[in-house]
Length: 233
Image (cartoon, rainbow, N blue to C red; front, side, top):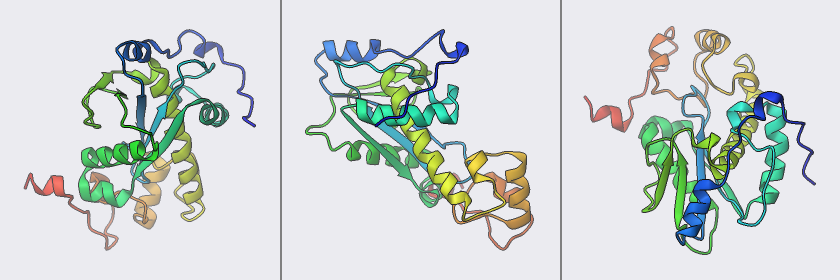
């Protein structure tokens, strides 16, 4: 049974994502519309994670907002409601090692491919709605929405699924790497994370091709150079 969602804070009542884009696509004959959003792109550690959802045409969900606007307990409660509301959902990841080897653009395409495959749809989607102005999906009918997670209900739902899933992974990893505060920073840059890197060096879940590796005291672990960077040399 889904957990009740806390009462919306006043700051979140002014605007909410809707289904305007999805309805336009449905009216054009696009029956299966997938919303996609990513999280973890700017993190120093952990996976790059993408959520994908197919929202129903005949049922609404309330109190849904962009995941970045919500508190952790609000996202957790909405996660349970979303997975019971949508027609299909999935989450895809690119591991830290894949981010290093492929570069972030290719890693994002890989995670999107995995998320779409995880939906297990009876047929390919008719349209895909994504956040931002770069088409990392490559679908023939991709709708790009800048700040899409505050506009599209599909993208907002995908953003919450991706965020909660990745946060849970980082909280679990924090037990393996005490001192890095992954349960709090989720692998993103912050002063305590930087201090831990300087004291202990990178962990197995750090992205070792990133520039922060050049700023560490010598740990015996050189910065990696990925395929995209090699092509620039």
